[in-house]
Image (cartoon, rainbow, N blue to C red; front, side):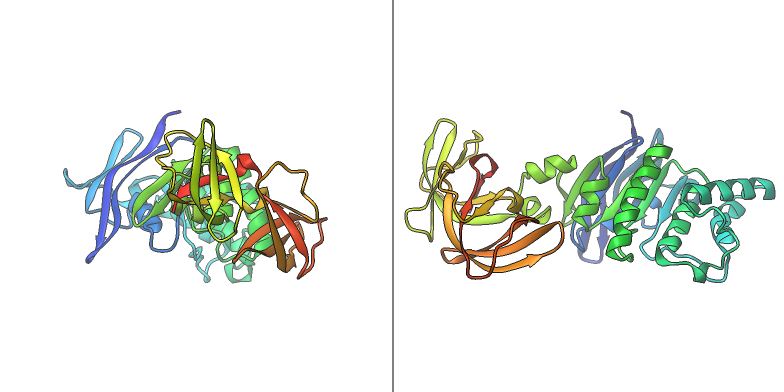
Length: 365
């Protein structure tokens, strides 16, 4: 698939702080490309440079075959000439205008005819599920409706790229869930390229074709949602994308396709996990065993399992609907685990904890 947007060695300084550090990205046409990371990682600054709201200090940005930014060659195409739509975190809906006028504003700036404006606005409102709302005053809309107006306004002039900056962060949890689905369905229907900025892992994993995890203005890792979740390449990605159980130990043996680890604070506890090869780990080295909470089995009697068993005590159990979240003490450490919704455990209950061999990964301590 062809690249529609390319960033090459882009940097941005704010005083002595380098917010974005020689960032290079290739964004495929018709994809949802997400910049994921904590506050201050440079993701919103990157989006604003793509939109033309910030001038980079280094690098180039190319939209299809057109260079829209080149610091070295002194090229900077103004935002309104980049043919990109943007939805801000605050939506930026004008309260003194009706829904129709809010959506029509970009077309009026571009001097479209009244007939064309009406046709395009009504089509955009229908796309986002707001047909019949055109005469409503903007302040009379709910948060979810205001967000749809902002999306319609960004789509009305048929941009090549849609830029979304934390668009769901102001919505309540139930509405966020619905809007995630609506956004994905709309993107698939239009086939538009979306660059999406969020700190929310669930949004990134559920919406994206490709995710870039950013840290201190640089790419920590990029790939599909499944690759990032299942095959984290750095401790930062491992701990930021989803939850992880970590148990400290020491690598005891390496035998072909298997590694053997003795846990540090639990006498006689020996665990086995696959040997990925070329791991760079040496016998006697301190390591962390990592496993996703949902991969761990908890029960009264798991003695039939082949190894990788611990004995623990339930400290807390929170029922959250689709699952229970349990804090379980094993040795000197408390770990957070997820249990199926039908499984009931109680505080102070003794349980067995099984870490399936294939679900365990090793990291240098």
